[in-house]
Length: 249
Image 1 (cartoon, helix red, strand yellow):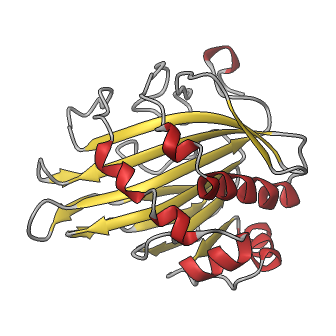
Image 2: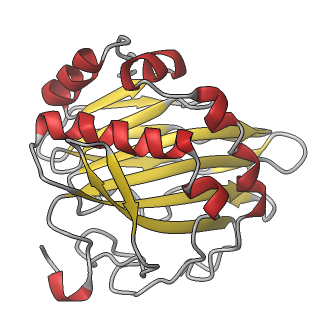
Image 3: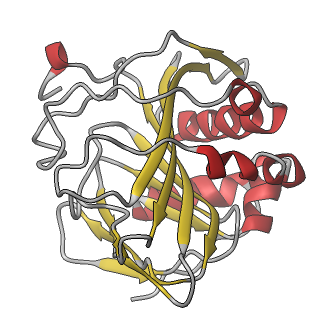
Protein backbone atom coordinates (compact mmCIF):
# COMPACT_ATOMS: atom_id res chain seq x y z
CA UNK A 1 0.00 0.00 0.00
CA UNK A 2 1.17 3.54 -0.75
CA UNK A 3 1.13 6.14 2.02
CA UNK A 4 -0.84 9.38 1.63
CA UNK A 5 0.69 12.58 3.08
CA UNK A 6 -1.33 14.14 5.90
CA UNK A 7 -2.89 17.60 5.95
CA UNK A 8 -1.22 20.79 7.09
CA UNK A 9 -2.13 21.21 10.75
CA UNK A 10 -0.39 20.12 13.92
CA UNK A 11 -3.60 18.44 15.07
CA UNK A 12 -3.85 16.42 11.85
CA UNK A 13 -0.23 15.32 12.14
CA UNK A 14 -0.69 14.26 15.77
CA UNK A 15 -3.92 12.43 14.88
CA UNK A 16 -2.21 10.54 12.05
CA UNK A 17 0.65 9.50 14.33
CA UNK A 18 -1.77 8.45 17.05
CA UNK A 19 -3.91 6.46 14.64
CA UNK A 20 -1.36 4.62 12.51
CA UNK A 21 1.97 5.00 14.27
CA UNK A 22 3.48 7.10 11.48
CA UNK A 23 2.85 10.28 9.48
CA UNK A 24 4.23 11.19 6.06
CA UNK A 25 4.48 14.95 5.48
CA UNK A 26 5.05 16.79 2.22
CA UNK A 27 7.12 20.00 2.59
CA UNK A 28 4.25 22.48 2.71
CA UNK A 29 2.16 20.58 5.29
CA UNK A 30 5.35 20.14 7.33
CA UNK A 31 6.03 23.87 7.15
CA UNK A 32 2.49 24.84 8.09
CA UNK A 33 1.85 22.17 10.71
CA UNK A 34 5.20 22.56 12.46
CA UNK A 35 5.77 26.27 11.78
CA UNK A 36 9.07 25.63 9.99
CA UNK A 37 11.37 28.01 8.13
CA UNK A 38 12.03 26.07 4.93
CA UNK A 39 14.16 28.85 3.43
CA UNK A 40 16.30 28.77 6.57
CA UNK A 41 16.63 24.99 6.31
CA UNK A 42 17.55 25.30 2.62
CA UNK A 43 20.43 27.55 3.64
CA UNK A 44 21.86 24.66 5.69
CA UNK A 45 21.69 22.02 2.94
CA UNK A 46 25.21 22.76 1.70
CA UNK A 47 26.66 21.36 4.93
CA UNK A 48 25.79 17.84 3.72
CA UNK A 49 28.58 18.31 1.14
CA UNK A 50 31.12 18.38 3.98
CA UNK A 51 30.26 15.27 6.01
CA UNK A 52 33.15 12.97 6.97
CA UNK A 53 32.99 9.30 6.08
CA UNK A 54 31.39 6.85 8.49
CA UNK A 55 34.30 4.61 9.64
CA UNK A 56 32.12 1.99 11.32
CA UNK A 57 30.29 0.26 8.47
CA UNK A 58 30.54 -3.48 9.10
CA UNK A 59 29.44 -4.50 5.62
CA UNK A 60 32.71 -3.21 4.17
CA UNK A 61 31.03 -0.34 2.31
CA UNK A 62 32.16 3.26 1.92
CA UNK A 63 28.85 4.75 0.84
CA UNK A 64 27.89 6.64 4.02
CA UNK A 65 29.04 9.95 5.46
CA UNK A 66 27.60 11.45 8.65
CA UNK A 67 27.76 13.82 11.59
CA UNK A 68 26.04 13.36 14.94
CA UNK A 69 25.12 15.64 17.85
CA UNK A 70 22.88 15.39 20.91
CA UNK A 71 20.47 17.82 22.53
CA UNK A 72 17.97 18.10 25.35
CA UNK A 73 14.59 19.52 24.35
CA UNK A 74 12.07 20.95 26.84
CA UNK A 75 8.73 20.80 24.99
CA UNK A 76 6.78 23.22 27.16
CA UNK A 77 9.28 26.05 26.62
CA UNK A 78 10.68 25.02 23.21
CA UNK A 79 14.14 25.18 24.82
CA UNK A 80 16.78 23.19 22.95
CA UNK A 81 20.16 22.77 24.61
CA UNK A 82 23.22 21.04 23.12
CA UNK A 83 25.05 18.51 25.26
CA UNK A 84 28.72 17.59 25.25
CA UNK A 85 29.72 15.35 22.36
CA UNK A 86 28.95 11.73 23.17
CA UNK A 87 29.02 8.44 21.27
CA UNK A 88 26.07 6.95 19.45
CA UNK A 89 25.17 3.57 20.90
CA UNK A 90 22.40 1.05 20.29
CA UNK A 91 21.85 -2.43 21.71
CA UNK A 92 22.08 -5.36 19.31
CA UNK A 93 18.37 -6.00 19.91
CA UNK A 94 17.67 -2.88 17.82
CA UNK A 95 20.66 -2.87 15.48
CA UNK A 96 22.05 -6.33 14.79
CA UNK A 97 24.73 -4.99 12.42
CA UNK A 98 26.14 -2.04 14.35
CA UNK A 99 24.68 -2.49 17.82
CA UNK A 100 26.93 -2.85 20.85
CA UNK A 101 29.55 -0.41 19.54
CA UNK A 102 30.36 3.02 20.93
CA UNK A 103 30.48 5.01 17.70
CA UNK A 104 32.08 8.44 17.91
CA UNK A 105 31.21 10.74 15.01
CA UNK A 106 32.23 14.29 14.26
CA UNK A 107 29.67 16.77 15.66
CA UNK A 108 27.23 18.69 13.51
CA UNK A 109 28.79 21.99 12.48
CA UNK A 110 27.96 24.81 14.90
CA UNK A 111 26.63 26.93 12.02
CA UNK A 112 24.00 24.25 11.49
CA UNK A 113 23.31 23.21 15.09
CA UNK A 114 23.08 26.87 16.14
CA UNK A 115 20.84 27.98 13.29
CA UNK A 116 17.38 29.24 14.17
CA UNK A 117 15.71 27.06 11.51
CA UNK A 118 17.44 23.93 12.86
CA UNK A 119 16.44 24.80 16.44
CA UNK A 120 12.86 25.43 15.32
CA UNK A 121 12.64 22.07 13.57
CA UNK A 122 13.87 20.08 16.57
CA UNK A 123 11.79 22.03 19.08
CA UNK A 124 8.60 21.84 16.99
CA UNK A 125 8.92 18.10 16.62
CA UNK A 126 9.55 17.80 20.35
CA UNK A 127 6.35 19.70 21.08
CA UNK A 128 4.40 17.56 18.61
CA UNK A 129 5.65 14.29 20.09
CA UNK A 130 4.85 15.55 23.59
CA UNK A 131 1.20 15.73 22.54
CA UNK A 132 1.26 11.96 22.16
CA UNK A 133 3.56 11.22 25.10
CA UNK A 134 3.71 14.03 27.69
CA UNK A 135 7.28 14.42 28.94
CA UNK A 136 9.34 16.96 30.83
CA UNK A 137 12.24 16.65 28.40
CA UNK A 138 13.35 14.78 25.31
CA UNK A 139 16.83 13.41 24.77
CA UNK A 140 17.42 14.06 21.09
CA UNK A 141 20.04 12.60 18.76
CA UNK A 142 20.52 14.31 15.40
CA UNK A 143 22.25 12.54 12.51
CA UNK A 144 23.22 14.13 9.22
CA UNK A 145 23.51 11.33 6.65
CA UNK A 146 24.73 11.25 3.08
CA UNK A 147 24.37 7.97 1.16
CA UNK A 148 26.16 8.01 -2.20
CA UNK A 149 26.64 5.69 -5.16
CA UNK A 150 30.37 6.22 -5.69
CA UNK A 151 30.96 2.51 -5.07
CA UNK A 152 27.97 1.39 -7.12
CA UNK A 153 25.22 0.87 -4.54
CA UNK A 154 24.42 2.90 -1.42
CA UNK A 155 22.46 1.45 1.49
CA UNK A 156 20.43 3.90 3.62
CA UNK A 157 19.62 1.16 6.15
CA UNK A 158 22.31 -1.54 5.99
CA UNK A 159 20.90 -3.03 9.21
CA UNK A 160 17.62 -3.84 7.41
CA UNK A 161 14.13 -3.27 8.73
CA UNK A 162 14.47 -2.06 12.30
CA UNK A 163 13.35 0.01 15.25
CA UNK A 164 15.74 2.47 16.91
CA UNK A 165 15.06 1.88 20.61
CA UNK A 166 13.66 5.38 21.16
CA UNK A 167 10.17 6.87 21.46
CA UNK A 168 9.85 8.79 18.19
CA UNK A 169 11.86 9.06 14.97
CA UNK A 170 11.83 11.73 12.26
CA UNK A 171 13.43 11.07 8.87
CA UNK A 172 13.78 14.36 6.99
CA UNK A 173 14.77 14.33 3.33
CA UNK A 174 17.24 17.10 2.50
CA UNK A 175 17.86 16.14 -1.14
CA UNK A 176 18.13 13.24 -3.54
CA UNK A 177 20.07 13.65 -6.75
CA UNK A 178 20.86 11.35 -9.66
CA UNK A 179 19.54 8.14 -8.12
CA UNK A 180 16.90 5.49 -8.44
CA UNK A 181 15.67 3.34 -5.58
CA UNK A 182 15.55 4.60 -2.02
CA UNK A 183 11.99 3.41 -1.40
CA UNK A 184 10.98 3.74 2.24
CA UNK A 185 8.93 0.98 3.85
CA UNK A 186 7.05 1.19 7.14
CA UNK A 187 5.47 -1.87 8.75
CA UNK A 188 3.53 -2.56 11.92
CA UNK A 189 5.86 -3.93 14.59
CA UNK A 190 3.12 -6.27 15.82
CA UNK A 191 1.04 -6.86 12.72
CA UNK A 192 1.19 -7.48 9.00
CA UNK A 193 0.18 -4.14 7.49
CA UNK A 194 2.68 -1.86 5.81
CA UNK A 195 3.14 1.01 3.38
CA UNK A 196 5.83 1.93 0.88
CA UNK A 197 6.68 5.22 -0.78
CA UNK A 198 9.63 7.21 -2.09
CA UNK A 199 10.46 10.53 -0.48
CA UNK A 200 11.51 12.89 -3.28
CA UNK A 201 10.80 16.50 -2.25
CA UNK A 202 13.34 18.33 -0.05
CA UNK A 203 12.03 18.79 3.50
CA UNK A 204 9.40 16.10 3.22
CA UNK A 205 9.51 13.97 6.33
CA UNK A 206 8.44 10.70 7.87
CA UNK A 207 7.51 10.71 11.57
CA UNK A 208 7.23 7.42 13.45
CA UNK A 209 6.21 6.04 16.82
CA UNK A 210 9.20 3.74 17.29
CA UNK A 211 7.35 1.30 19.55
CA UNK A 212 4.66 0.67 16.95
CA UNK A 213 6.42 0.49 13.58
CA UNK A 214 9.61 -0.76 11.97
CA UNK A 215 11.17 0.89 8.94
CA UNK A 216 13.77 0.52 6.22
CA UNK A 217 14.85 2.21 2.99
CA UNK A 218 15.92 0.21 -0.04
CA UNK A 219 19.38 0.63 -1.64
CA UNK A 220 20.05 3.40 -4.14
CA UNK A 221 21.80 3.20 -7.51
CA UNK A 222 23.15 5.90 -9.76
CA UNK A 223 21.11 7.06 -12.75
CA UNK A 224 24.05 8.70 -14.53
CA UNK A 225 26.76 10.52 -12.60
CA UNK A 226 27.34 9.81 -8.90
CA UNK A 227 24.08 10.09 -6.98
CA UNK A 228 23.37 11.08 -3.39
CA UNK A 229 20.57 10.86 -0.84
CA UNK A 230 20.88 13.32 2.04
CA UNK A 231 18.75 13.04 5.18
CA UNK A 232 18.51 14.41 8.69
CA UNK A 233 17.42 11.71 11.13
CA UNK A 234 16.21 12.81 14.56
CA UNK A 235 15.38 10.50 17.46
CA UNK A 236 13.50 11.48 20.62
CA UNK A 237 13.74 9.44 23.83
CA UNK A 238 12.25 10.22 27.24
CA UNK A 239 14.45 7.94 29.35
CA UNK A 240 17.81 9.48 28.59
CA UNK A 241 20.30 8.74 25.85
CA UNK A 242 20.95 5.11 25.03
CA UNK A 243 24.19 3.85 26.48
CA UNK A 244 25.70 0.47 27.39
CA UNK A 245 24.49 0.56 30.99
CA UNK A 246 20.95 0.84 29.67
CA UNK A 247 21.15 -2.11 27.28
CA UNK A 248 17.75 -3.56 26.59
CA UNK A 249 16.02 -0.48 28.04
